Length: 198
Length: 99
Image (cartoon, rainbow over all chains, first blue to last red):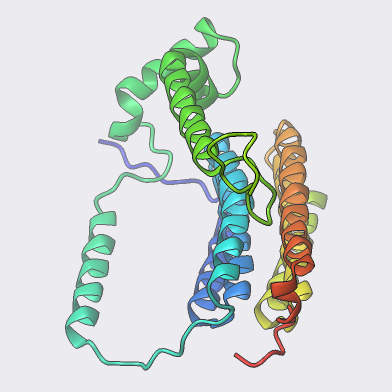
């Protein structure tokens, strides 16, 4: 087995900078007690991770992260915050040595497990040798889609994706039917008959 | 080289927006910080495409600009709707209020 080393390209430095900022945002979210600040920071966190996914060439995941994480869930959490409180209740810092030990042990085990993983982009890694390689070889011949992930999602697994879209659409329809279409201020009051006055 | 310098400049601007989002102090500072951070993300994705010689990323960056715009409008609309109701007029939106 030949050794494979990931090339140090400028993109690795970009990834490092993005991950560093992700870490700072996460720490700030943990320490802040202003719920509005936490919501805005979580939007920023989603934007950062979307940029990180783009630099990893996972464009579809990045789209989902930007649309759902930065867009929809920010508004949903704002709605939740306005229904509850603007500030988190003060937490009395306690000591839980067992929990701390478990967290450190799990973290150490996970870091130890990364030593066995193949290098990033290694062509002889298990993920790149079986089905993945077949997709990489076949996609330019079968479909003229430049991005292989898009080709797999929209063409090879087209029926699967269609099923997912139907499920999500049905769920959305169900929620709208249950809650009623209304403004942000709150939906129309529900009446049994349309001619009934309240 | 030019794109590398641009990337570094965008990262510096990103960290400045992050500092504004961390320290606040008012609600609108944070909305603005989030919005300008989104703009920086769009710029970063665009420049990153040229840095790696794949300008196709520019299309993705344009879509991000759309999402960022819609999200900021959604957040601000949310507050203007809430402000219009009488219940929230009693509670000011600024964070200088007592907890």
